[in-house]
Amino acid sequence: MTAQRDDGPINPQPGRSRMGHWFRITVIGRNPKVTLARIVVLIVTCFVVFKFILLPIRVDGISMLPAYKDKSVHFINRLAYLRHEARRGDVVGIRVGGTNVLYRVPSMIYMKRIVGLPGETLAYASGHLLINGAALDEPYVIAPCDWNSAPITVGSNQYFVVGDNRSMPQAYHSHGKVEKEQIVGKVLF
Amino acid sequence: MWLWLVLFPSPERVFAGQFEKLAHAASVQPGEGYLARMFGAQTAGGFFSTNVEVNIDMPGHRQQTTMSRDDIVQAMMAMHVSGGLTVKFMDISVDVGADKQTAQADMTVEARVPGEQDMMVQEIKFTLRKIDGKWLIIRVQTVRTFS
Image 1 (cartoon, chains in turn cyan, purple):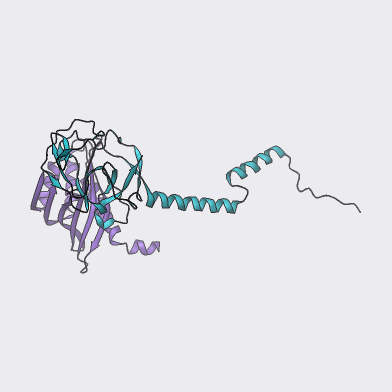
Image 2: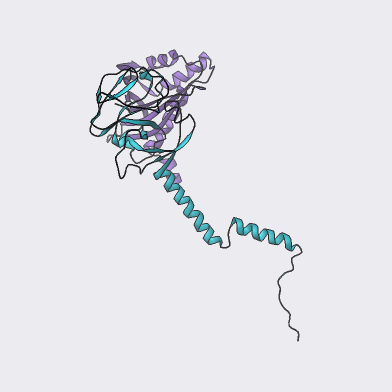
């Protein structure tokens, strides 16, 4: 009786098999179940992060030039104002759909800069923004502006927002007071 | 589940389809001829009741009026949009009344002229009534995002 070692089927192309083995490890991993679990976790994490925390947005328009260019992509941090209130100079996303779609992510969001805080009185005089009568230094405004307006007082639950590009007539630039609940979050990057 | 949604679509789905058709009819292709524009305007007019209350409150323009369906068609024809106009209704939120005969639809309308960098965005509130089995717009009201 002779003993015979079972080495399995003979592979006529061992080099190719080794490549296939490493290709499979690289793509699927050593343990396909663990890889599958990782993929599921990654998809769920991406969904939660990009749907509820960091909203990806694409700028459409010229009202935030020169800081935010047309067609550029940014993110809105929806958790930015959990621990503190919005500050002057913050660029924020503002929901267009009113408060009835508070928990639904709107497909259209205004991007504006907060210039007036609750309780303040704002006015434009020859293009200069006056906060409680004093001119605000706005280095982000590059284009010449000739706006004039009567003083407006911001409510206790409101912010005054405006775009950086004020080269167009005031009537054609969407700006004004918004309710705190309309602010979706702070624009990052 | 899928069959149920197809057979009994939600009010949002029904109205979204209707407003998509309205947006398509109200849009104008670049260089579109008079007859095509007339057909589009007539089709769009079919989504409105015979008399429509219009409340416009936009910066520099405030108007409250009642327009007939023909007025709406003529107003659409009078728009100078030789370069084209693309109309889109987004974020439609529908509230059907308890009587199931009236509904309110809140949405954002985007109007864009092809090739131009900027666009017009406006919140709009439509009030609709079921007339002869068809939901028709009886009131159009703009909503100010910024006060």
